[in-house]
Image (cartoon, rainbow, N blue to C red; front, side, top):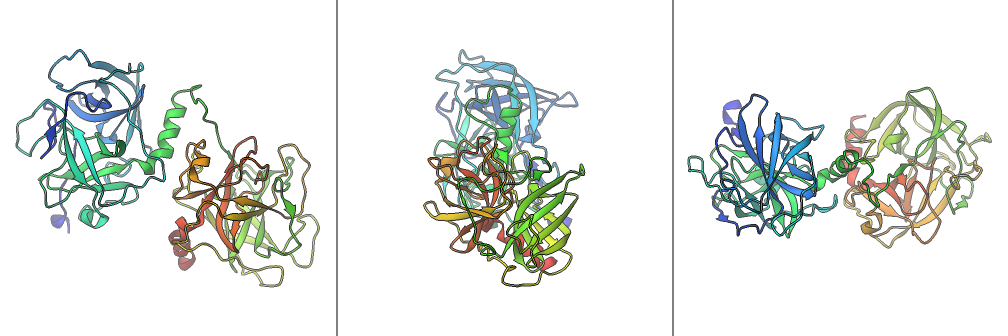
Length: 497
């Protein structure tokens, strides 16, 4: 099989000078003011170069495989062989490679470069906007790649910035790249046209309607399209974290989201904010989770029964051990409706990130099947293509607090919450409409809070979301994990277990 595989080439320049785009044209001088030329000293002491682009005054984005012992960034350049009055040369203070970058598969081929000083904005030096996490560029769109890469495999070099029109292709066009991943990468360039990025273009942007949607990553040795670009929208949560973590005290109006954490002993579980008490046992699928944390603390979350032996909840509710209480209304008053079952295995989503609060979903397999009664039943959940839209009024259910300082209520609570346009959650830096829901009217103090984690967002009797996080002030909206996005993963776990 190895002989049949195409050899791939990371589009990093070798120890020669910078080179150019294949099949493109020279850019109008300084018409791409965000372009950055990277002069790299490798770990072995060789010199090389890559492309990149300015996203804030002190951050450049590029490919992870462009990492070196030291990097100098040139901004405001058109001809990199000359010293132009528009140029600003700035050394890189810190190279931030994506933690999951894999040199074998080339996945997560993305890196942030923190500059030693801020660039001065001019007509020749400026930033380029990035997509939102939900801005998933689709096949058929015409975009442009720009860089100082080669014109051909054996062609001489040119020092001036080039650009080329390239079509976004379907994932089938990149099927011969063994590790191609449609969710994390973009397949770019029609195989019927000899237009592509090549050596030296690495790290340069894929420009679609003035937004950087991709980063030049790799292609074939013979330069035949398509090439593979890192998909920026899939990495926006990590990018936002990188920008905040490395620039202390410069978050502007951004703030941290508060995961709806398990209520710890002493903090006491409480109820939904601005809601009402449920009619006892009117929500027979609700599960109260008693959690022993890795530190041996006691805590609690909500969840809901989707199969007789499976409960769905939030990944941040994972613990050393979990006991599920079904058939409860008042969690402190024992009833004959109760069924207390131990969790046999916890399945947090493999891509859950507790720092970014993304992929916040977990399945719990029970040691024994629940008995279905009037007080214990299962809840249907969203199908793969059931993409709930803004404007819909739904309900959140759980045993969370009534407010930050209110005394707790032990009975199950529920509250009406409207599905909002994704823009209402833009202040949450890692929010992504594709995998999350924005819910709750900011003009009403009705919300989920601590202890509601893992509870369902119910729309017409269907679980569409899982309570994930809120603003620390408890002010709506809140963010829920969008269940429909994870249906394939859920089905896989259920089928295998």
